[in-house]
Image (cartoon, rainbow, N blue to C red; front, side):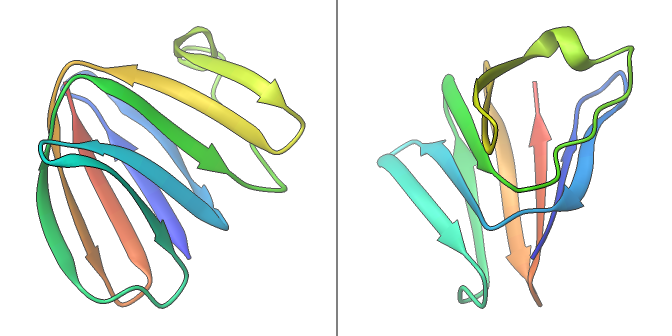
Length: 93
């Protein structure tokens, strides 16, 4: 599935991922390929991205923490998420 993480300043990440875990207001939840359509509000916490090909722009690479070769995290203050047709869009503050 395709993940796009957008902040008010720039596009932080855009690429193919195998999963993304998000800090929902009612608890953390994970989205996998072919997930049902969803729109949700996010709270402060970590966005956890699992992918085999993580490529970042130099301007934003300091915002992400590398856990291992396939897992990366991003701290957010809040945001919203939409999943539809195997495309996840995260609008993050």
